[in-house]
Figure 1 (cartoon, rainbow, N blue to C red):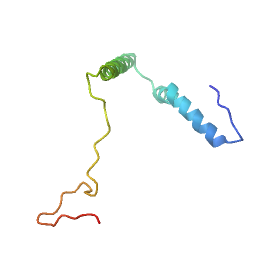
Figure 2 (cartoon, rainbow, N blue to C red):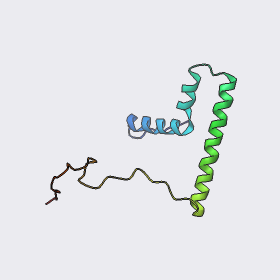
Figure 3 (cartoon, rainbow, N blue to C red):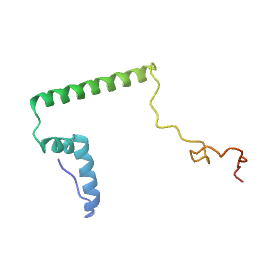
Length: 96
């Protein structure tokens, strides 16, 4: 893996390196190798990962074909409500 350092900007080069390592799965692999993993646990984990990948691929193709709705983030609360219900008998407030 190679990262170019431009204008002696080490911070930017480190950020790029970390992003590349994250994308390659190096951090995940290092975390897994910290402790011994039994062969049966490894098979179970790999099967679960394969199922997860297959479901994700099926969901993506269904979205592309218009069969499933596209996933969105959490719905935002109405502006100014703060997520708390108004006190009983309180007058509604309006922003001026």
